[in-house]
Image (cartoon, rainbow, N blue to C red; front, side, top):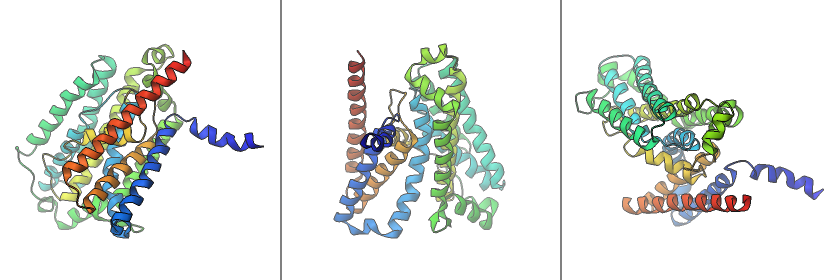
Length: 336
């Protein structure tokens, strides 16, 4: 009887990365309660709505980076693609081109970077750090050049106030059922990519490559195709975040997305996604992005300096990686 009751819990905890995800959720609850005690305004409805909207950017960038991390790789270009997406879309709209065309062009450019990353890492076996470092500079260079090395004018100056308001409402300021559309966009994409990673053959191949790339090859997994798919997911998420930042500012900023590649790594790692590959679930990335934004929001509300915020989050990321390394070593010793 007791054994039967324990089975669902054991089954839940046996999922790769579930332990890290649950730990992150537990940490999130503790952090939120502590900040709420210090400053009860943290519990206000408007602050919660703003927190969810701000968290959405970290969640999306975390999803893209997590897909790549699970294969044992990394994407340093994701932040620059955010800036490229924001600048391309904003420049086109400020020139009078309709939002749908601007969005499609920005998406195609980001996906092109994703394909290049996948081919360089998967086919030519370049170290992902070097390959994506190169495309990071390429994407940021495009962001600078697309509008002549300057930030764009307001997008409303080109497409008109009504069209600009619609674009901004879809990606940032608008609400559906009382919640900002930014959060709904992130939630829908989270559900889609969670399903793809956990319930499809491509998802199984992603984990296989991260666990042992040579064994995956022998099992018939196409390393090139699967690796490219993960970088395409990363590029797609970066493009969406770029559109969100464009909608937020009503313009394109050449420095948009700066450091977002590290934010994506932090969101994944805090939630139990291993930078060594093969372990992690997007539920953990959701928790990690929530922890990141709650820390940032709470520290802001109690008046902590930006340096303190970065210090605290940096320590948490390092501790999360250390725990992953220690856990893996323990597992290896048990197997031996």
